[in-house]
Length: 290
Image (cartoon, rainbow, N blue to C red):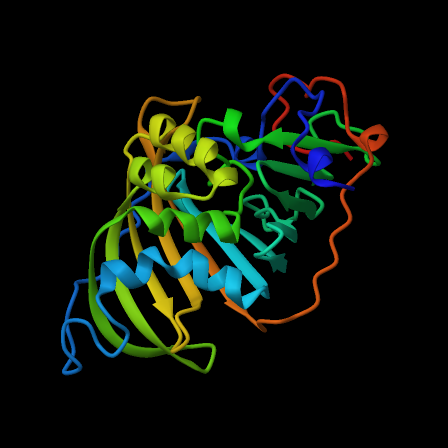
């Protein structure tokens, strides 16, 4: 499938994502512990923090591909809920595939089948989405029309979009050396601005990030970034604040992206037009239809 097919508007007529399946969201607090500077100094050996972080997306493009593990944490009714994903991503082609697992019900019984997500420039494809969608059909969502730019709606933040957010880094500090998955990394803590990120982003990311800047409760995105000695993101924790349509209070969501096995093979096949669901999602149907 060529690039024109990647970006062609789907016929679903709706943009309802995985976050719509987790009802009764509360405004969860997702902060990070205090900041600090180690004996390595303010910048460490990696350079000035803001400049390093703004270049992180370009560094991932140069790295090519990686395996990705994602999680999205929120609070619902006093209980922390986590949506988990696992898959691969090609940073040069902006293509990825994730298997996303939704949380079990309060009794511990899984309510939903795993959802397959295909990430492309400007669009997200989901299979096993539920909400009246036939099991053999895909739902297509346009990132630019989602009020969160698809940073939250899909239940997993597109790894490259997450890195593009760092282009809007306004302030950052070097915290110190640590390790992620056995790899030595530099830990940075800071705040990015979505509007600034949209202006500096690649062409495919500008519209979605601009939509997020307008649609979130705040355009400020606090983050903790862990970069290896080559400047590649190994772990990125970002905190978004959005207003859920079911309630007026802003909801705090922590999105975590882990990257490893750089250079891994990535083969993503996008669905045919005939396999994309052309109907409407069932109104008020939060759980997938089995």
